[in-house]
Amino acid sequence: MLPHAPVPPSAPAAPRGRRARRSGLRAPLAVGVVVLGLAVPTAADARDAARDGSAKAGPGTASPAKPSRPGKPSRPGRPSEPGRPGKRVGPWERSDPDFGSAGNRVVYAHRGASGYRPEHTLEAYRLAIRQGADVIEPDLVSTKDGQLVDRHENEIGGTTDVATRPEFADRRRTKTIDGVSYTGWFTEDFTLAELRTLRAKERLPALRPANTAYDGRYRVPTFQEVIDVARKASRKSRRTIAISPEIKHSTYFRSIGIDQESAVLRTLRKNRLDDRRAPVVVQSFEVANLQRIDRESRVRTVQLLDAAKGRPADVVAAGGTTTYGQLATPAGLRGIARYADAVSPNTDYVLPRDPATGASLAPTSFVQDAHAAGLPVVVYTFRRENQFLPLERRSSTDPAGIGDLQGYMGQMLDLGVDALFTDNPDVGVAAVKAFEAR
Image 1: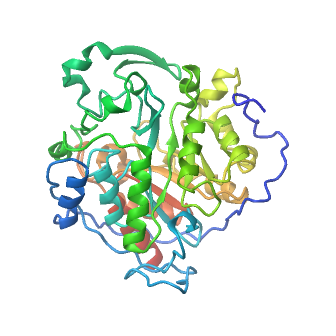
Image 2: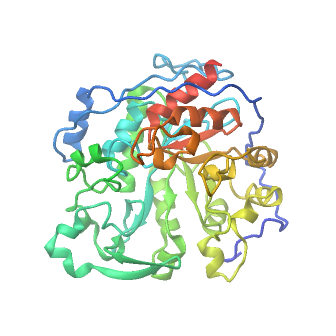
């Protein structure tokens, strides 16, 4: 099938025998208690910051060990980290981690520990690992010379200091990407060498003013550097740190002659990570690129779901009408299971909110429907600021105030979700620990 002709949810497809599906639900339990707060910096902050070409690191958050999980006994053959199961045997590249299931809840560090450091920086990933995250998430975009770098968007005016660099003033452009007009500076107009001269900054300074203390300290990392961080941390901690790269704006990049999927697969193969047992799961909001990766590689994948009325960019480009809401139906989820290993919806698919008040409404059947299709559910994005929480979890009317994120996560775990995408991995680890203790 052509790359831009996604298989509709109800279309027949041959079953993928190599897929190892997980399912199962837990009965709802009581909501967990709040455990928040900053901790003192560690010596690792300074060492890691120096390796990243930055100034000294400042206060961070604690590194709580996660408890042994029911039904996941330690494997023989290697010592285990205190408080963690002996999960990894042999090389990291074949460590075969669990990406979330009813018996093993998983914490994904959304863009790293982005609640405490500028997102998509090596220090944000290192901090997330120290906090106990199971998976770190780089978002991948391309440079002018075809290199994969780690930014949430290819427009970098909001996440780097490029606007202050007079040598790049003439690179400012207005472009339409996935149907939306943006004005700024774009990675595809820079070589990797040029991007490496820039420094990252906090994307949400009004909500996270403490993070601005780290502005200018960290470079834009490459995909290879993120892989290296996960590999090194896994070997050092003797537990598996997985990576979940998201391919961004695939259809747009293809329209300007850049094949991001091939670049991702080349990098994975160079690192011996194109394997079912590799600690990698590739994400996308598009459909055709995940179908292509499913055909051309052995790496695992997860389908992201945006707002229900929206449509994947490749579906729009191909003239299709399938919406994310249709993909989220029982039939749509069965279609996703033909090419992907998990599904990642936003929180509204599981616990919607009243559009007028922001208060949570009754849970949906999404988790049960996904599990019936054999898909683990990885929900995004959990953030501790009031602005991102439902009304009943907010601490005040201050958008930047810190609300009951752990309780919100605990509620989602009670509803059966398998994994949590969060800007605050320490809170996610505490929520999983409290859930499993119950």
